Length: 213
Image 1: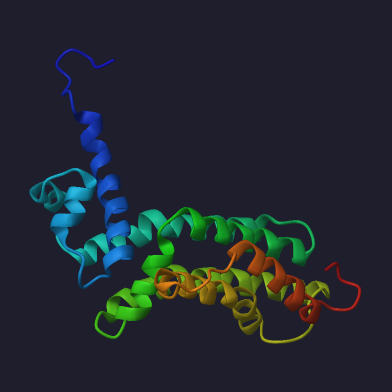
Image 2 (image 1 turned 90 degrees about the vertical axis):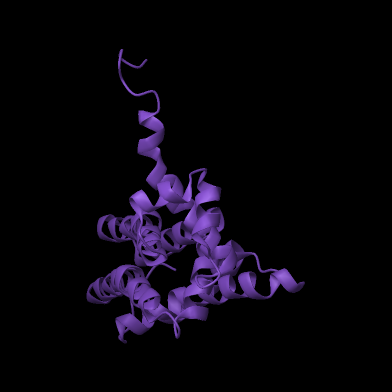
């Protein structure tokens, strides 16, 4: 209950930046960066355009907020899972990939990925932020896990960063397929099933003899 004299809409105002960021993510995913309009983002968030400007001056500011507030926390979870996992490397990889697949299915991040890829030439700062704050962090965490598994004798010799890319790249292809071709009638892929099958295949080649598949 509000105290006497406390502004009635204080809680609502505190929620506004997060609502604006979530609305921006959805509009970016649907329209792309160039076509996204601040008016539409404000309308989706249920605020006036003037209220939006109280928190974000430009679309670039909104994109950075989407990366930092919506997507980056999931990368932090991936890094924490990788650092804390005590068991076999194969179990860790399945857990990490399962987490990422869940995020892809539960959010509009796939549309944002497509946007970054499609508009990187005209808006290179988008690609730079996406790479520096997300891609390099996730790939680095997975490569570090590969390197640690190699030191334990679980994974065959090879470039850890290349192994990391091999492990995750079919998910990116599946997301691009979903965002680009499914809307025009192509049959979708079941992303969880795709990644389970992929890991069953690729881990067989990566793991050293005697390591748990």
